[in-house]
Length: 296
Image (cartoon, rainbow, N blue to C red; front, side, top):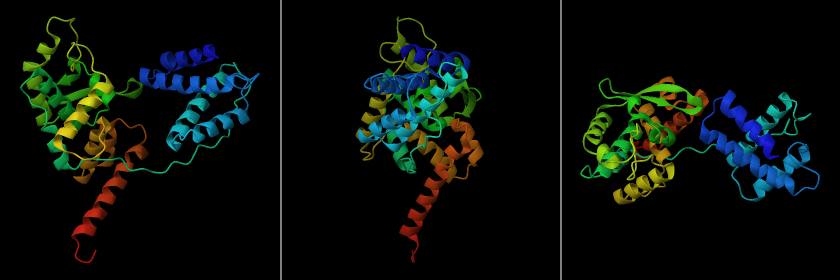
């Protein structure tokens, strides 16, 4: 079973050029399915039936997994078996014609402009870590990048003279995003007074943002940083690094940006993914109307 998964992951990495994080997610989901199938005598990935795949999806639901999680597992299973059939490694696809669980549309949580200003004002640009943190938060809000894209930025991906960042997104797709005046200023100060002190005499690196050991920051490490600043600012909302990405998109649309431009900057392949932010701006307009109109 492990061999089939390895073949599939090699296909995703070499032929389709998917990002390491995406491939790791596929491997986790398929390994979980393999463990489930091992409990059924005589079954396995190659011999799985439609009934066993359905039983696995029911097992996920009984574990309390969200519909989005179950849907992700099913998508991984479908892609996996489609690959196996195309490579003649199995005769049939047991996931064929299985329905995806219906997903409830949940609007992303965003910060108001004043909350963003409050959050971005928390790092103290005195110590190297404070200069780095302020620059990271400014760049995240200025560009709407994913955290994985932010922490993997290298020095040659930023152009402070022209004010843009060259972002490498999912599937190694490249996009150009404007930086903005404040983000550029924070980056200049971090590069001038912070980065070299964090690296010191450690191994040279072209990474833009580094931790106290001069190495790459992890997503979990940055999550802890942003949560600490949110608590320090007294922001009483669940907050993750993705919250700034959602806020970036929402604030742009609220101020008149067109949907296609926001889609391009976010790196969404399908514009329907970006359209959720238009639902959010409409709901915020209704909220403002209800609070301010005399006859609302």
